[in-house]
Structure formats: structure tokens, C-alpha cells
Length: 378
Image 1 (cartoon, rainbow, N blue to C red):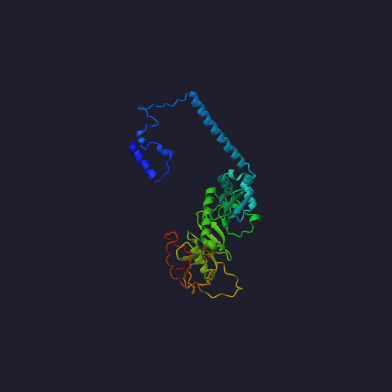
Image 2 (image 1 turned 90 degrees about the vertical axis):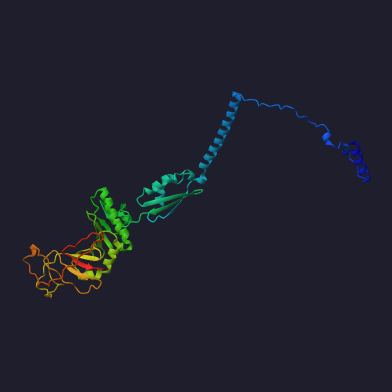
């Protein structure tokens, strides 16, 4: 070992390298004794156990920290809720055509001026739906002070003649009484609701509303809708006031078919009491009882099927469409006993038998009244 050290010093001197005092340390560190001696047996250090008092102090410290955190949170919440910047000062209303913004504010009640974060949105929606004009509503917050309200209003389609005249929507919901405020509405009148129970009134109103909803823009041609006790729908048109028995849906196609034939039907059946559209591809015209012949001062009319006065409750005609050009013969039904002594013009030729009527709109086979005129539309 000593020799190796001497050899190392000699090499350093030959290379003329400076000798550092640290080089005087022994090179073999393994031969030196370690500065620390590891004991042969390990000593186990035991942590001191906390007593009951220590655990109580620790629990009190944790509770105090939680209390301080809760108080800090409550103070922050109270400060936010009391902030004037978060009070509702603006209400944006969309979708309202009949209700004014002021009426919407009145429905919202005390929401205007309250803190926007503390509002009960569902309760505000329920308040808006309490108005008969509001079908549905949506409310959202826009921080810091704006409340956005979107309303879907009910659209009046008719005036329901119940205990009083009221606006009615397509679902049969009665909106509000007709008065100066709603006088601008020019709507058809729904009859047959007066004196009915709440359930029956609701059912009849729904039927009438469904008819008008199905007609769409053609509802502008309707003056009245009469809901009969059996649920049948009878429509009175604007203008000449023709009466149509509609039967079941679809209603739009039936009314459009009649409007296409309207001029021809008015010319061919001027004394029609009503037109029955309940049969598929047919229009059945029921005529009023024929009038008593006028005085002899009028010029005599030529005898013929189109000018015959038939003493009965109605007459039969069969019109083939789409030509509808030549009048069909009329059929004489049994005489009305009340008109036995009145003069009757020359009888017209015996008509052809009335063609059979196909199934009605409901799919049930049906025959028209024997005192009716028939127009085949297809």
C-alpha cells in the first residue's frame, strides 16, 4: 500500500503536477473505519399514544375549522344574494302576440326586483301557464339582471257559443269571453255547446277544433260549425250560407270537393236544405219542401223535370260528375197529405233508378235519404 502511494507521488512529480493536500488522504477508503457504526440489533421506536384529551382537542380543532368554513361560505352567499347588481330589472318577452309585456310582468309577480339566482323557475312557468292565453312557456336567466321569457300563445280559431261567447283554440280550449278587447277577431261560431256538461262541452269543442284545424286556410270559408248531440258536425258556409254535413275526417278534401262543384250545385239544386258530404265520392243534396205555386199572374213555365213542383218533402236528382251539364230527371215521391188539394203540374217522365251509394267516410255502407239529390264526384 505504501509502495503504491510512493509510485503515485513519483508519477505526479514527473508530470510536474501540483500536489493537493487532499492527496495525502489514504486512497483505499475501504480500509478506513466507517464514521458510523450500525448496531447489530434494530431498536423499534414506538409513537406515543394520544389519550382521550388529545383526541378531544383534535376533534375540536376540526370542528372549528369546519365552522369557520361554513360561516365564510354563508357570508359570501348572503353578500351575493343581497347584491343590487343581481336583482331582476329587465324582462325580455318573445312569442307574445296578444299579451303585452306589462301583462307578462304582472303574471311573473314579484320576480321583477328579486335576486335572479334565488328565483324558482318552475313556479314562474306555472304562473304563466295559468293565463288562458299561454299554452306553454320557457324561462331562462341572463346574468346579471335579465330574465328571458318565451311564450307559446293559443291561437283562436272560433267563437264558442257556450254560456257566453268565448274564443276557442284548435284543441277546444276556451280562452276568454268575446268583448271589446277581442272584437277584431273575425272567426266562425261553434254552436251546440250551450247547456252541455263540462265533459260533453269539452268533447264537442275538441271535435269542432279538430275540424277547423284540418281545414286550415279553408276555414275562412266557414261561418258556423254546429256540433249535434250525436257528435255529427254541420258547417254553414259564408256567402250563400250553404249547409254541409261533414261526417268524419278528413274534412279538408270534402270541403275542397264541394267548393270545386259549388257553382254547378247552386245552379242545379237552388232549393237545397243541406248537402251531405258523409258519403265517399258523392254529394247528396237534400231539398226543402217545394213551394206552393204562385198566382196566375206569373207567366206559365214550361213543364219539365227542372220546373216541376213536387208536393213532397224533397225531390230526387242524380247528377253525374265531372261533366255536370245535363240535368237529370226527377222522381215523384209519395205526396204530402197536407198538399193533396193543391194543383200539381204535369208529371215528369219516370226517372232512372237512383244509383247505389257506396260506403261513407267511416267505411260503413249507408244509403242517402230517399228525398235527396245525388252528385257523383268520382
